[in-house]
Image 1 (cartoon, rainbow, N blue to C red):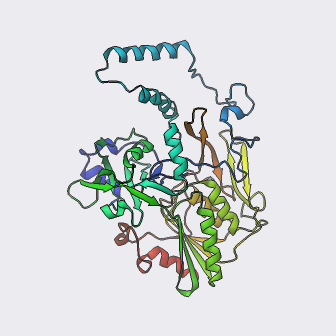
Image 2 (image 1 turned 45 degrees about the vertical axis):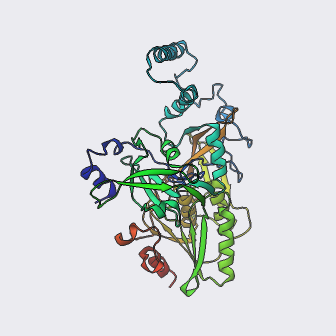
Image 3 (image 1 turned 60 degrees about the vertical axis):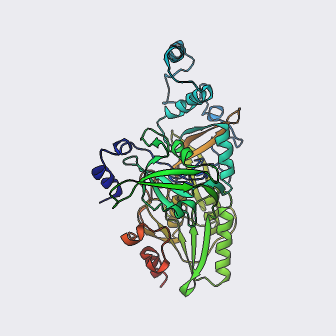
Length: 453
């Protein structure tokens, strides 16, 4: 029985607030910018604005979408007109009416700053897109810091289930406060301190309650399969240094590279790992993208470019070296990313994936598969094929907005579809709850190693 089925049957009454809804985003609890379904809890910016990646069409400078529309005077694309008018008298009158009722009758003290921020939150929530959110100035500044890979929090990746809205632990980082406190993969988060989770809450909002300063304590209320009652787990937050790439040489001269997330330094760490393993005489590479939620697109572009020859042609591709193509809501190509570094790697590769491998991790996987440079092993990936841009506002706050859909070198649209592995292998049940799985007990890894024989 699936985790979500158990939650809905055994504890239907206790947690019915958190078992409906549909949104997917995720955050590592501490904070990392990410383009995926899960991240290091805190922020969710999918910054794709470099690596010659043109977010808004012909102009390369950072602009708001309204400054770079398709030419229509109101910024609306043809066929996407809107009757919504924030400046209408009807909107103003209704807003003033609600405000007057609050001023006259609301019992508790008002926090004017929170009230103001809620208006901006509401604008983004009205888009009905879990990936489009508003950040205060402080949240935006924190998100920028988090992209460097050092943050304060509990050190666990969380995600929100697409089908039923439950928020669950993907994995704690090894050695993190979350692991030391006893959090396990697949734990369902029911409450954070006094905050009872509901499906109308943005994941960013929940993450903001989980994260916090080093030395402070957060209490996580958890549903765990096999336990009679909910678990209340206090976790002392700490300073987390997220080393996103680790590697080692396995038996038979097969290099193993684990990529946890895509942040500012991930591409450089990955290339160094590839070079070092090759210098040690690696005859093949296993690249582990399991439970990698994604991250900064520029990083994964640099990594794939390092592997693919500039003049290579993907099956179904439209031009040599094509890595990624983005299209707007009208199907217009916004930009193309192509190989340009003059480097390639001539080694057999196996890529490990699972259902929590998302977005940038899927881009890496899909590119390697389309160019026939890797065998994909594991289970179907998550299926996030849309692009977000984080756009800074004039007062230092920011919005993250879904602005495009991406297509792999062979033209595939994987959004809500995912990537099917070449060899489907489920991780054995006895290993699912472990934070770290020994290589010898990792049946997916062992299957990948067979491809080199």
